[in-house]
Length: 476
Image (cartoon, rainbow, N blue to C red; front, side, top):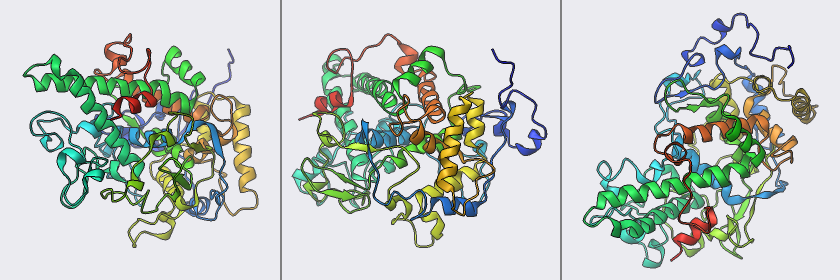
């Protein structure tokens, strides 16, 4: 074993002064926290916001100009499933661009667990409006009898109030048609399972609810562990984490969401969304923020807005693929059309918002995190060289270090999943995402990995369960 000390193993002078926030020492229950703290010798990166604005602007170096290539292995639906997972485990309504944000002071308004609280809310006692009157099935557009919506469309929609707002556990799951339809898919999944187990609980709706919720949640967790993570971080890295253990996500007390995950690594999906996509088999392609796809927060008004899942997941081989993971993003994401008019021009770019957010949370650089993880110096050099070559001749100074989110995108594009560039996350991004999501499962006392590590899915084909099986199970 080498006697050379990796970054974080030696002394770091003035670290207490640089990292004066408590989050560099420990995390607080119910708040966000850090993976890499003061004891690791990690200090925050500062990048001039002028450079970050230039880096993330429309027509700049991150703009794909409509020239993104697609992956060979990642169904497009996995990107939206990633968004759904994010809404299940994290909600930050308090951080600001114009403040230094301390994770210890920011409450996470979602439970840090893969427990589908975005579907079930706080349960039928606390949020009975999510459930049917005479059973504990979840409401849909059909059972709610949505106001002023034809029957053929309300059966394909979420339950909505008189203003058209979705009656669901997390309003974010109505922000585009795919995520809205995913919410409905999981509601239908639960309702079918509830109907399946109800005869086992005569005159005991609560018992049927508890069994159905557990089955639905465990099958969802199985998908996250056995389909989503292999697609995004690769089977090799996932096997390393599951067999060798988590080295970095090790909460002192209870599970929490690290900002290296929520502010940087888990925003990789922003690079994998195409500028145009299809909702229907053989249908037209729609822009990300078109009224058909991206209007969101409104009822379905046309059959064209109902998703055909074979276009998003590998049901019959006809699905669309996600675009390659790299430093390029769809042009429409670099000038978001739905922000309030008073939003500063620079903050209308999703890329710039991500970069500024990283600065405000005192995130370390990508190189520093790679050093902590003992990533091969040659791999780090390849990523750094890729970034510097990209910025050659541009008026952007990243000499202090590469912002963590941007480093993770560049790593994905240069090294990728299982060593295949562009197909998923590299070692830095994949380790953060893999350790946090597996850790949330292992540390949740109600998950299948915590309660029964020998559990095998019972609702799919054979001894497994995938999005294809979920879609088939919920079919009329």
